[in-house]
Amino acid sequence: MRLIDTHVHINFNVFEKELDSLRERWQQAEVVHLVHSCVEPAEFKGIQSLADRFEEISFAVGLHPLDAHKWTENTAKEIQAYATSDRRVVAIGEMGLDYFKADNREWQKQVFESQLAIAKELDKAIIIHCRDAATELEDILTSFWQEVGPVRGVMHCWSGTPEETQRFLDLGFYISFSGIVTFKKAQEIQESAKIVPSDRLLIETDCPFLAPVPKRGKRNEPAYVRHVAEFLAQLREVPLDILAQQTTENACQLFQLSINS
Image 1 (cartoon, one colour):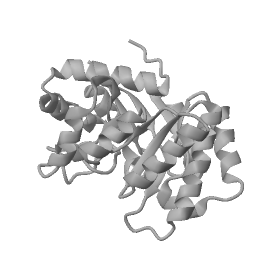
Image 2 (cartoon, rainbow, N blue to C red):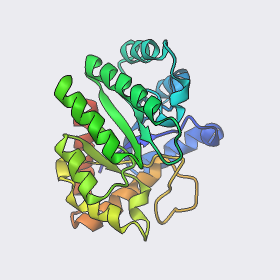
Image 3 (cartoon, rainbow, N blue to C red):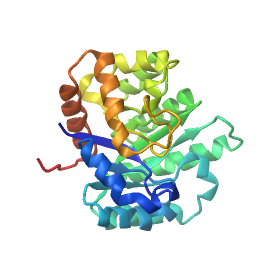
Image 4 (cartoon, rainbow, N blue to C red):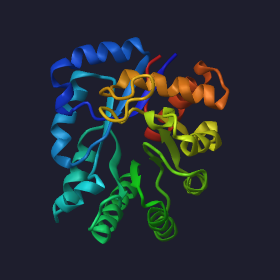
């Protein structure tokens, strides 16, 4: 069995002193590849160093909506330069909208649209963060699709309703579920997970956040993506090895990965 964790942040300081043991654990859990997301371009060199250290890491570069205030006139050029200088860059992001406590909604939209344009120009996948902003985000994507053209991508750490899920599926997106889907009170997210077609389903940890049951409350790590896979397999009533194979193939398709057997 082979699993791919499609969203990690192992560059965070909480992992600094145990990266080798972290890797041993994800390998024991049959995780064969990680897609490392990026919160801001300043992280790029550190993420690149992790990929130099661990050959099973691909990564993204972009600016998180909660860091939209860091966008400058040079940020777009910086993202483009990083994305074209290293073949291991497989996506732009994470980007999107986060309206949970936002007072800069219009600026977030502008930053998001700028990164969409970069992804389209470079033919890179996008990793989308969306919190309390599904309608607005869908509107931006729909307009971009109509005026410029579609971009392939994933709604990461998805926690939307089935209705919202369907709208993003209709736009061609993959849907990625994290440990949240395993939580007892996450019935609506679980209903969303049931309707995602098998060829659009992805799994992730978003570590170090949101550890799945039975590790809830602990620091999350890539090995725990197996718990997400196990839960989704049971929820969707398919064998674990089938779900693992499909989500791995989906990740390879979206991010244009070549995974050794």
